[in-house]
Length: 113
Image (spheres, rainbow, N blue to C red):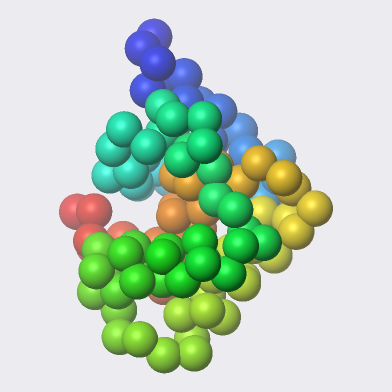
């Protein structure tokens, strides 16, 4: 089992235990691959959900650029929904899991087809 496979298994476990979501493993794998080398970097692999600048970057770089969504208040509502699903008290919010939750929230699975 390679490093990426270990991380995907960890992300699936987070989705099951912390988010109470049954993961679509094919989609989770594609989202993880889409995160690129960030998943291997200790700082970049997690989302700083309490940092407004980080949330703005996610909105711009992921939701608008990657998923092709139009800017509007519903984007931040979706980000806040993902934070609530993951758990506000959860310190380590893995980027791949967070992005997976956003893809599911906005119904943009086709972006990874």
